[in-house]
Every structure is written in structure tokens, then in C-alpha cells.
Length: 253
Image (cartoon, rainbow, N blue to C red):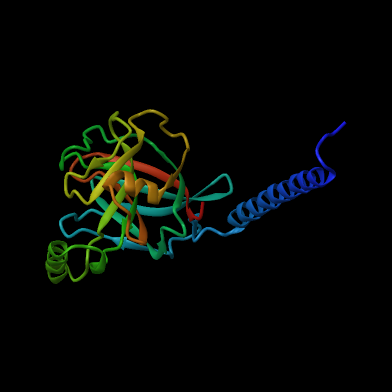
């Protein structure tokens, strides 16, 4: 039935077996890698049982601070954020490597938006909740002009500001889902992942790749070290904003 010499048949059969074994081994190796990733604990897993891991971030020109406290709901702890015509933030004490842990996940909800909020103006730069990823300035990774600028800022304030910041916001109006420059600095870019009065008092879950977002926003690779911050801010609006965060996680893919 077969006209090929038996040696060729054997070789072909052997090749099929080898290829099959290779495919199985590759699949098993991929499964193990995926399983390892699933089993790796998040580098930051904040469920807000306490606020011990968070430091206050206050501003010299804002007297009334945002209130950050823990509330219990349905057997879980929540971060409650209330801003009464004021503004301040909290910063997580730990930094992390964004290339080892590029994924951020969180769940939040808001009571209402700030009616006068407008992300294009300084006066309207107020949000019931926003999550920051601040990327650490490294003088070895920037040009001479930037080093001079940051050195001057450090002389005034005693520390370097972030080289760049990604802000995930619940915007007060409807906007295109794209990056918007902060009215205060071009080194902070905002993404309105939730918008307006849609989904008020509903839990909204988000998952973003920090490295991909930085490249998309700034057109370059991010610095390796980053830090989280959270802020609710109604300063100058005469309004009160309330929001809740269920969890924030930073992890490998």
C-alpha cells in the first residue's frame, strides 16, 4: 500500500511523535507559567481593613482635608472618601516594579459627581475619586534639561516630584475614552474610566496594564518604580463628594 521505503515511514512516524511531544511539552510549560502567575500573590493587595499602609498627602493651599475612613459593608471593609469642599490624598507606603507587576485592579463607586467639575480647567479639576500611579523620577533616565528642572524643584520642596503620573478618574462629565493632560502639568495624564452620572452607587471594577497605559499616554517606556495614591477632591466647588473603594491590587499579568 505504501510505496515509500520503510525507513522513510519510520522517520516520518518518529517526526510526528516528536512534534506531538514537543507541542504537549510546550503546552504544559505554558500552563505551568500561567499557573505560577495565578499563584503569585499581588505585590500590593489592599482590602482596607486598616489605613496603616497609607500616608497622608496634603497641600499647603487647601485647609479643609478629605476624610478617609474605613466602613464595613456586607462583611467587607471599604475605604470611604468624603470631601466637603476640600481636598487631600493618601499615598501607599510601598513602591513596586511596574515591569514585574504591570497590572492594577480596583473596584469603586460614587454617590454623585461634582456638578462644576471640568477636567480641562484648573477650577474644574475636582473628582469624587481618582487612583494615581506615580512613576519615580530617576536622573539617570532623563536629559540634562529635565535634570536641571527637577533639581530646582527639589531645592524648593525638598524632594523630587514624580517623572510622570497616570490618573484613573471618575469624571464629572462625559468625555472620549482617551488620555487628557492635567491642567496643572503635562506630566500627569488622566483617563476617564467612568464618567458622569452613569452607574452612580454601583460598583465598577477595572483592570489596567500600567506599562501599556504609560506607553500609550506618554509615548515612551515608563520608569521601573511606581507608587499608588488615592484622592477625592471637591476643593473650590462648594460641593460634597462621597466615594468608596472596595480593593486595590497590583500584580503580575
